[in-house]
Amino acid sequence: MHASPYVIDATDVDFQQKVLLRSQEVPVLVDFWAEWCGPCKTLGPILEKLAVEYDGAFELVKVDVDRSPQVASVFRIQSIPTVFLVIGGQPVDGFQGAQTEPAIRQMLERHQLQAEADPLDMADEALAAGRPDLAEQAFRHVLADQPTESRALIGLAKIAMGQGRTDEAGALLARVPLEDPRYDEAQRLKGVMDFAADAGDEAALRARIEAHPKDAEAWYGLGATLASQGRIDDACEAFLKVVQLDREYRDDGGRRALLSLFALSDPEDPAVVTWRRRLAAQLF
Image (tube, one colour):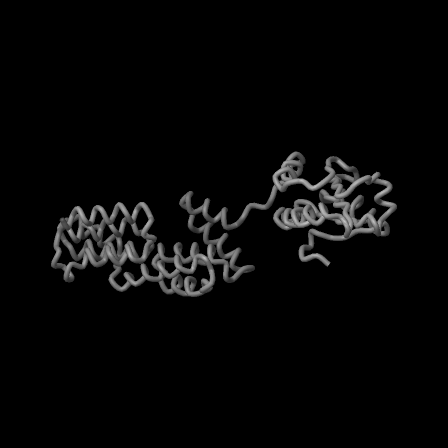
């Protein structure tokens, strides 16, 4: 029994049904193998991984030649592993011996078989295209099957932060497991959200600044608003303006806010290095 519905076994008894007839509906990749075959044990996991990744674009049928001598004879199997791609009841491509994953992908692509797009990559592309609505759909789709997928949790939290839904963002970040490699990133984002207490309406704050460009309070509120949305570069710009205008506002609040953002960020981040230099230039 295989974990994926797209990976099945066939024998002399049911080969016609599972391969020849089934290939009239969907391409079938047939893997001729045996328990004693070392290269088969290398190739098998690669084929199964691709079957899962391609998500139904083809089905992988595994045939143990020792248990299916008739099929092996019909296909003139002389060495294993041997793989055939069967479409419309006929072998249209194949190879002998263990192959690399890229080589197998190339064979599949020759027959217009494409892997399903990674929904996380789709979400990132949607964000880059300015479509957070589509990105949110993709992230939620992932979380429906993988509730602790940190990339989706953090991505969705960033969208929520950008839209002022800080409670929802906090709940999402809290779901990132402690042992996850992205846990520290989630914690940094939670720290950024602490600025929400001083956040306000961005449009109103910008209008206030336009009318009174030297209003340190408005600049600070804008910085807090932007920081709570995860817009760190813009927030740093606003807080640096507070430093320039009034060091006494909130007891050097602009500088302290910048230092808080630096502490919540990766110290090796080129943007953080640049902002540290700009702050130092302003102070000294």
